[in-house]
Amino acid sequence: MNTRRIALASGLALTLTALAAGCGVNPTATNARVAPAVKPVNGATIVYALPTQTNINWYLPISNSADDSLYNFQLVDQMYMPLFYISRNYTIDWADSIAKNVTYNPQGTVYHVFLNPKWKWSNGQPVTSADVLFTWNVIKAASAKNAPPPWPYVGAGTGDIPTGVKSVVANGKYEVTVTLKQPANQEWFIYNGLNQLTPMPTTWDKYPGNITDEIKYLGSEATNWHFVANSVVDGPYKLVKAVSSQEWRLVPNSSFPGVKARDNVVFAYQTSSANEFAGLKTNAIQVGYVDLSDWNARGQLTNDRLFPTYGMDYFDIELNMQPNAQNGLGPVFQNLYVRQALEEAIPQQQIDTAVFHGFGPPQYGPIPTVPSTIYLAPQLKKPLYPYNLAHAKALLTSHGWRMQNGVMTKDGKQLAFTLMYSSGSEEINQQMEIIAASWSQIGVKVTLKPTPFATLLGIIDSSSQASKWDAAGGQGIIYGGSYPSGGELFGSTGGLNNFGYSNKEEDALIAATHTPYPNQAINLQHFYKYEVYTAEQLPNLWTNQTSTIVAVEKDVYGVNRTTVNAVVGIPLMNYWWVGK
Image (cartoon, rainbow, N blue to C red):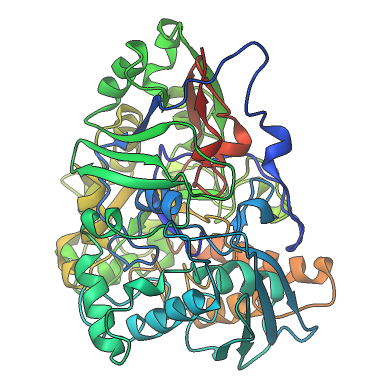
């Protein structure tokens, strides 16, 4: 995964142990292809349930901001393999990566990427350095602020891409050398920079002499599923059908040189969590999830096995701090004391118990408290802003806010706004209702507005839509295998979800996490300083770290914590198979 991806609160997540870059794992050894006494049913169909009211609407391996959805890339990455596939242990899984190795100098300025020559496009041609360079040239052009719609590229400013790169050259058919203008933390650049270079086939290079026309062309085809269906792929699957709000059908790529898929996979649209649960009960869905609002009814799933998953992600409520935000509350939200009051009035412990049945632990910053990871600062194992309605209300009144008709008011401005959130999930409904009720006790009046995920994402990530929203919840950021520092999230430039937040001290602390250090201990010291400051500043409001309860039909094998890989959010579906 090359950038942070927006995810629903019910997005897949998983346990991890953070280790240094460069150490690989091979999931094949832990995922037997055939269980004893079970015969594979080659050509069967595995129906995979998407989160509720979630469409897939983008088909290229690189994206703009408005379509940078985790679920788009769950599909795309089955067709186009990443340069580095990050395992659930946060290490590079070389067996499922286009690259076979990467080396770098101690200064962190020169990186040599070696491609594995075994990988082939579905037309039999090898995946080469030329494909990587094609991707690089497209990314460079699509990153420009004046790039034609639907660009600019979402990763612009992420991992030194593209402005921090001095050169990208091919040193042969299977080697690429990337040289940076300034030293960079090696793990950060490999995970956040190099891994953006997912090889795209040079057969897409329709305008080799005109990169502007090229990115216009690719942008025009990005939402056209026929484009990739009629193209070469290097992943384990090919796309053969896509119907919005219905299904997306993949079939095995027979020429794939890695672990070949045995069965078809259908990404299935879900109208609601109740609809998805009904699909599990009738075996219409083979791999899905149990919305925690249905937790007490889980005994009805007699043909499924369940397991909980947590991930390297965070979930939040975004506040629109831009000057032209709806109702003129942008300048109000820019005040830390206002954000602190709102945070102190979110009853995370109550939400964990009442909504998530203990599977939604509180979260106090940009790194989850569960599962255990070296990236969690010790100070953030407990809240910096504990739930305290009296203190939250006092914060507002001490700054001149007064209760008028049940709403905090100052200089004619009311703390009253609309909170959009991802619709279709009862657990998200319940969470937002509890938050709204709690906020009302400190004089903050909220109108809840459930909104389909793709619509919500399009609104909050579009600068032209800034005047049309106040706050958004029910979604968050999955780090997707990227180094979990904040340049792509909270930096003044290139931020993915800052929405008007800008802080020079934050920028400096983020920059320090991008610097190479002689050992991991020093590296983590700088990381913790960034993390704690971010938690204190509340660029967004932290909400519960949510779990997904994965449900798998008993006849489907290979679906486990390794192949689901919710840390990255991109499952290894070619390791799944149906047996009888």
